[in-house]
Length: 272
Image (cartoon, rainbow, N blue to C red; front, side):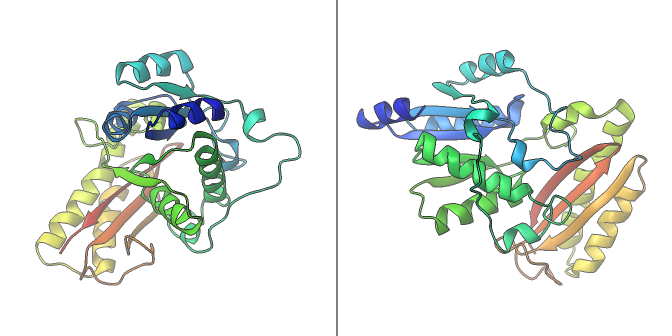
């Protein structure tokens, strides 16, 4: 991969990278289509990164289908797929990791200790291997996007980070590879996540600015559906991810909700 990146760069190409864990859906393909516009050479990585999964999380069960992914990637113009084995990315004796002090303390950080260390480490490796000038990430994983933007800034990676809007199913559910885990009943309950964000958006449009009230109404709607358990619902600053008390400026509403045994996330910017 490093040799191919060198060849592409020496030929004067701009490399656009879409890092993924595979099992593509329309959200991934939207990233690749945008990447096709942003670079001369489009590379997507497929790597289910073990260091961003906790001991009780779904690393072994995470869906994988490289042949299917290759067909879909080709259909949207991907030039190169980089799909390393874990032993290549973390060889024997590996002991170097990348951590962020503040951003990993909020939102998903407390319930997924070590997750963002794994994300920051693998993205640093990918940037060093693929050497992109542009990298694209989905806004559905808002905290991950914030972490990577901070990472690129702090470590002086010469990479432009582009966030691509969340792609949703026709019924509003944010697309995720983990949606395949949901039973039909659970999937109906999962719709409450996006519906609750819409409720908060309507509240802000009507002039409600108190974060506690907006969070309470959002949580109440989710709790009214079976199979749901809230990890967090919060309103925070879009850059620092610190909680806000009032929505006087554009604020991020971020949610993580267990639906059955599946943990789903979603978010939106609420603008007064």
